[in-house]
Amino acid sequence: MAGITKELLAEKIAEPLIAVEGLEKGILPRDYAQLVKKVENFLKINLYKKRSFDYNDIVASSKINSDVLIEELRRKNTEEKEKYLDVSNLNLEKVNEVYEAIEKLDEERNEKKSDDVTKLAWGK
Image (cartoon, rainbow, N blue to C red; front, side, top):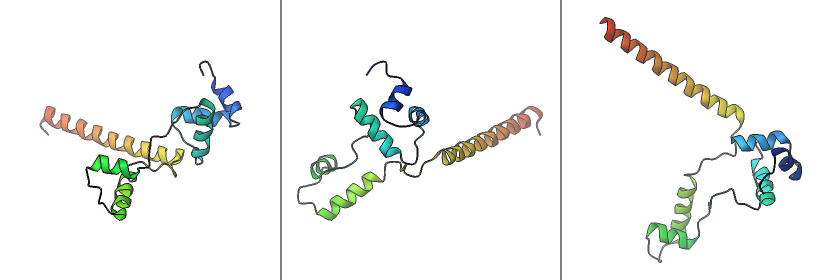
């Protein structure tokens, strides 16, 4: 759908423009699954990676024999799911907290580098 604007998309999926703009920037609202589903349906695309694993996927990827127990498959499935980031509780406030923590670490590193350069230059 070439040429569709954010405004038109928001109107067609009955969502506020700010939600579509946030999605475009990677900022997910608390109920992002519904928004993403609407966008997928409207644009006829799939935005999610395949996250579930069936028996054949697990056997093929882990090279285990076919006599594997169901409990082992469940454990493998759980381990694979844990590799994905849980964004169900992700919100702008938490994202800002992370960025602030990163900025603080960067500032501390820069101060240390500055002190090290001063010591090297002045021998103090």
